[in-house]
Length: 340
Ligand SMILES: [Zn+2]
Image 1: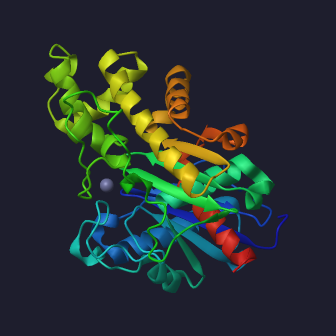
Image 2: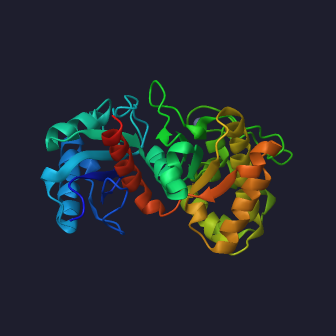
């Protein structure tokens, strides 16, 4: 084995954990998913055991000895503190009461006896997108990532490091207000977010936003649309992306509104941190090239940059989304070992 030490990345999800191994030069030792059940619904103790199992699995697969593991990166869905304490308000993934306020980072650290470095899943994906795009020049560059899923996750990387903020809540791009007056149609209701805000980025650019805000309105404009016949609001919302890929007019209007909202968000980011790159991740960019390119072009067209910024700015996608969490978590652990 070329290296004398390694870090591991563990990505915790609602049903599965995924693991990866990274050497100090930044090479990943696995190029695929190494998944095992996350047991999150069985409570914190079972879930921490499951993460330790995932660690064992990926070490066995790569032939790396646990003695050579310097640190472990962990990412989970939010909301959680910068140090990996699950929100006391609860969260979608960690729904049972014993999860509230649970310190998953410290629990895993005690369980395995190695330093554990925590990032939320969107921040981990942002770190990975940044590293993949900039390679060895990551420390000289900055980026902003928006990851469109059930909600809208975000991450801000400055000089190669994720910005966590005082409470771990930096980069919550989904809950940034975006001006919607020229996104919404005349008479279209102001979108609402589960966080309590109106007209924030997630209220438009997320699956939840489609389900509770955009689709109910657009169906009133298309009374003969086939989605009227589909029962279940969430199932209906999930079909919008497939329909958009097939060129369905109403579904494209929904994604155009999403792309405009992301563009507004990036315009705000341009004036906050003036990043080199703007990354878009999520199911919307894991689509057919025609649709994906149209979406990214629409985001770009709605991102207003100053002339100096436009010369160097890049709008690109978050690669390998399903592996991005574990890989980003590993990168977070590597940065911690190299520059504690
Ligand atoms: Zn919100």
